[in-house]
Image (cartoon, rainbow, N blue to C red; front, top):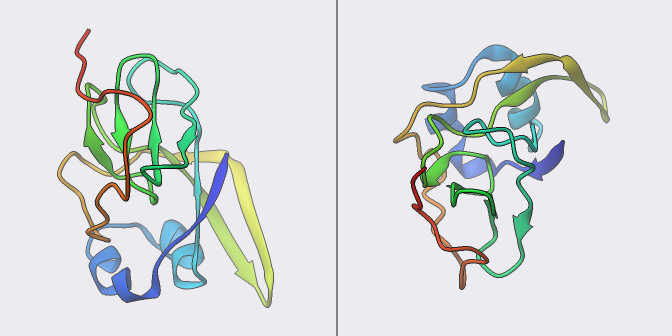
Length: 123
C-alpha cells in the first residue's frame, strides 16, 4: 500500500465524497491507498516528477490521494479503512474500499512536473 499525506485544506471537499472509515485517517492527515490499479491489477508506482501515481501498464494516472486523473481505469485507486488512536495510525488491509468515481478531485492537485508514463492509453 501507499501511505500518503492528505492535505487539511481539502477536508471539506473530502467530507462530501468519502466514507467515515476513510475520513478517519484523512482527518489525521493520511490516506492508505492500494497499490493495485483498478483497471487490470498492475502495481502502480509513484512518479517523482509529476508527484502522481502512474500505472505503466496502460497509462492510468492518479493524483497524490489516489483520485483518477487519466487513463482507462474505471475509478480512483482503491483504499483501505483506517483508524487513529492518539498518534497510532492503523490500516485494515482486510477491508478494501472501492476508489472514488471518475471526476472526483478533492485536492485540485495537478501534475507538478513531467509524467513518468504517457497517460490515457486505452486497451
